[in-house]
Image 1 (cartoon, rainbow, N blue to C red):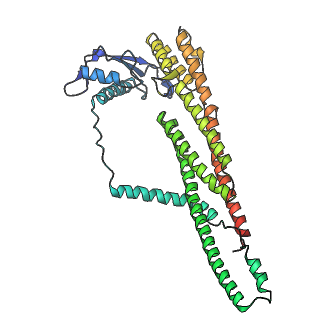
Image 2 (tube, rainbow, N blue to C red; image 1 turned 60 degrees about the vertical axis):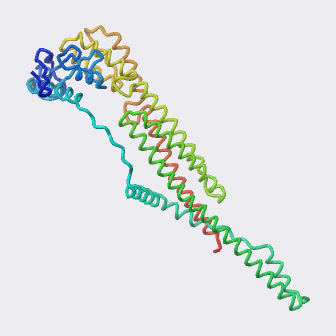
Image 3 (cartoon, one colour; image 1 turned 90 degrees about the horizontal axis):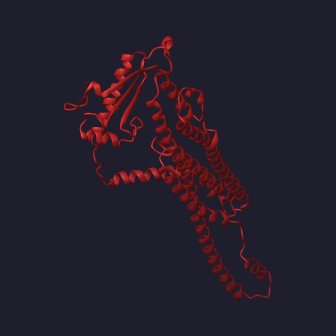
Length: 395
C-alpha cells in the first residue's frame, strides 16, 4: 500500500511493477539481471479521488500517456529492491505534486528606493559601456575656419588715406563683428558637443541591445519557450531605431558608417527566426510537433513489447532524439508508424544540428559572432577616425 496523504492511499494491486534489464553501467550484472523496474499506474481506473485524477490528467508531464497511464522507468540502482522503492517514491511524489495548491501572486508596487537603485544601476552600466566611445567622440573637433571679413579689414588698415575717425569707426565695427563671430562659434561648438554626447549614449545603448539579443538566444535554447523569440524581435526593432538615429550624427561629422553592422544584425535575426521555426516543427515539448507523434507511437509500441524489446525501444528512442536511425534495434517488432515518425524526427534533428556547430545551430552561432566582430571593427574605426581629425585640428 502506497500512502499519498493521511486520507488517500493506493492499493498494491493498482500498481503494476515489471522487472526489466537495466541499461548503462552495472558491472558484471549489466544486461544479465532484471534489476530495473518498469512501473505502470492507470489513473483513470484507480481508486484515487476525482480531484487527484483531474489534476494528474491536466499535468503536462511526459510520464503520463494520453490514455491516463503513468509510466516510470527506474534503473538508477543496481538492485531490484532499490529500483522498486525508487519507482514508488517517484510515483508518490508525482501524485503529491498534483495536489498542491499554488499560492496566488499578489502584485506589489515597487518602492521609490528600488526604482532609484534600478535607474542608478542602468546609468552605471551605460557609463562603463560607453567609456571607449566617449574618448572617441569627445575628441572630435570642428575644422578651423577664418571669417571672410578679416582679410578685407586687414587690407583696409594698410592704406594711409583713412582718417583717424574712420579708423575708429572701423575698429568699432570689427569689435562688433568679432563678438557676433564669437557667439556664433560658441553656439556651434555647444550644439556639436550636445550631439556628440547624445551619440555616446546611443553607442552604449547599441552594445546593451546586442548583449540582450545574445541572452534571448541562450534563454530560448535552454527553456524552449517561444516568448523569447518575441523578446528577440523587440530588441532588434529597438536596436535598428537607435542605429538609425546614430547614423545621422555619424554622417554629419564624416565618421565611419554603421550600415554594415546593421546588415549583419538583420542577417542574425533571420537566422535565429529560422532556428526557432525548426524547433517548433521538431517540438518544443513532448506534446507538440513531430516529437508528440513519435512519443505516442513509441508508447503504443511499448505496450505490446516484451522485456528485451522494451530495452531496445528505449535505446532506439535515445538515438532518434540524437538524430540517428538504427532500425536494427526493432527486430521482431512490427511498428511501421513508429519507424515513419522516427525518420521525420531524426531528419529534423539533423536540420537543427546534432552539435552546437552543426546545422541551423551552427549557422546562428556564426551569425552572432559576425555581429560581435563587426561591432568591434566599427568601434575601432570610430577611434581611428577621431584621432585623425583631432590631429588635423589647429586648436
